[in-house]
Length: 253
Image 1 (spheres, helix red, strand yellow):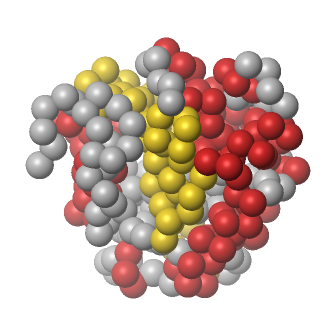
Image 2 (cartoon, helix red, strand yellow):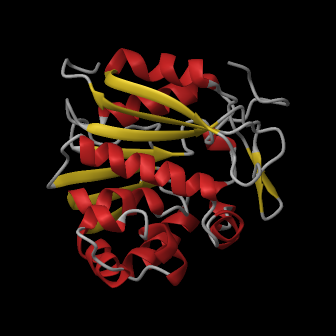
Image 3 (tube, one colour):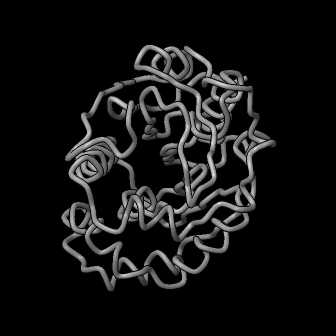
C-alpha cells in the first residue's frame, strides 16, 4: 500500500464541512454509468443469494450516494445511513424524504429483487424505514447492531493514512452482527479527488490491500475488479474493487 503523494492528510484535517454534495452528485450520479450499474447488480445479487430478509441495513459513509441504500431496500425493515460531512447529512435527509428523479435509473437494476415494485414504491419505502445518523466510521458506530451492510468509496477516500483505511474497514465489520452479509467498494489506486475545486485525500489501495484488510474477519469473501465503463472518472484510477462477504461468526475485537 502506498501513501498518497504529498503531505499526510488525516480525516480530521480534510474540509468535510465544505463538501459540495450537489456537485458530487452531478459529477457522478446524474446519469448512471455502466460500471455503477454492474456494481449495483453485483451487490443486490449477493444480498439475494445470501438469503437476507427483514434486515437492519447499515451504509457507512453514505455521502451523496443513495444507490447502496437502494440495493439494501428490498431486504430491509430498517436502514441507517451514517455520514460525517454536515453538508452530506443535509443532502441525505432531503433525499430520504423524497428521492430525486435521477435515482430512478439506479432503482431499475434493483427492481426485480423487490417484486417488480416501481420507483414510487422505492421512494415511499426509503422514507418510511431510513434514518440518517451523523457520525464517523473512524470513531466507531454501534457494535454488532446491523444485519446487512454496505460501504462504498469510504475507507480509502477519507484520508491518505493507511491506518485510517484499516480502522474504517475494522469498524465497518464490527458494526455488523456475526454472519451478516456485506458489500464494500473501493476506488482502486486513488490518490485523491476534487469536488467543486476542493481536493480531498485518498489512500491508494489494490486488490491485495482490500483482501488483506477484510479477510481476517470475513467468510465467503470475494474481491472483484471492475474496469471503468465507459471511461475512468479520474485519470490514473484503473478501476474499482468490490468485496462481498459475511462477517465471521467468531468475536470481532
